[in-house]
Image (cartoon, rainbow, N blue to C red; front, side, top):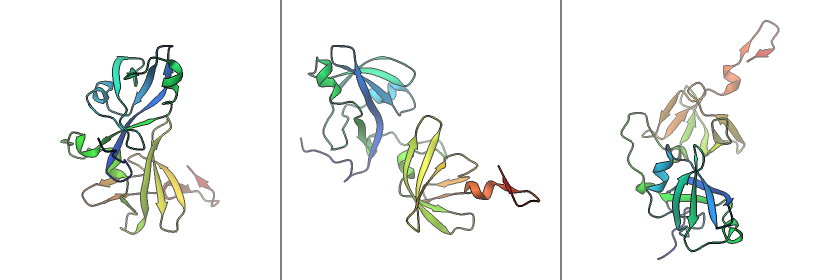
Length: 184
């Protein structure tokens, strides 16, 4: 089968191999899906270079981590080569969102970032989550890159069909007191 490149097509990262687990070549996979069961439904997962990663899922390890084996690998040392590997599926393999206002994080990438008056301030470059909540990485029109907490206060409007998100930058959320100092 020809390799499929996540860079050249619309792919969505749905998980990541964290590390080897045990001595028989199993790995721990963090699921970025709503439930652990969801990641196990995909027949084919790809790495960053578009190569198939043949996983056989086993049992949950924690709330968002599931144990799996890489087909054909039975040694920890060989499984460790996959540590940190992100796992992708084609965007069109994901079920359509049926709840109004629902979207996949991948749908945010490339959207314009506008202020309340509609002025374009930049573009969503990436969505991150380092453990304390979702963060949007925004490439501003002047080329600078900033990260903003993705919540209803900072991003009161998400319009996927319209191709934009509205931002209220944290600086604008701060209130000035009588001394001119800013308070959060």
